Image 1 (cartoon, rainbow, N blue to C red):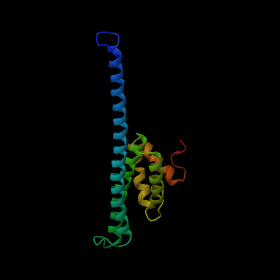
Image 2: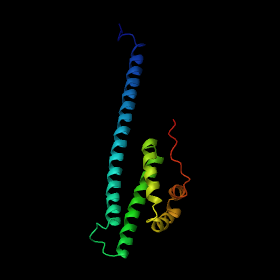
Image 3: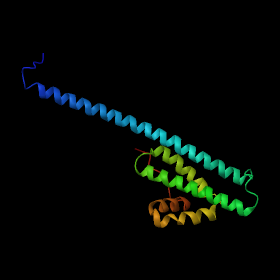
Image 4: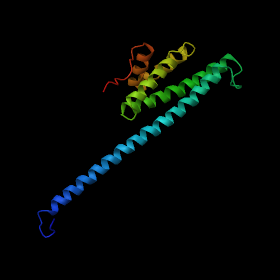
Length: 157
């Protein structure tokens, strides 16, 4: 039995309570990270789906606002800008550890398919060059995807 009159036992209890509090806080932190990652995944997947729908409507001739080739080029350019901005945000979050490697691997596979699409190629090349000055790491990443040099994240660990 712990005696409250023995002063040597009280610091031990305080230490154990403090360690218990730290452990609970750490578990709460891990749970918060899981929730944040799930929300990020849902939000970015939603945004991608919206952009993908734009691409499909433009290419399939389903967008009634697009009545000629010039308007089609403008619409593709706008959608590509949105898409590259989305990709740059994802790239930033991945490099901050907020997107898991497995998810990043799926997303970069999709990026490769879109970025290497021949119909978008001239516009993509022009837009990617805009990142060279303002976001050089992202520019290198995109250039590597286009050149087929990006093999994806290392998911072995």
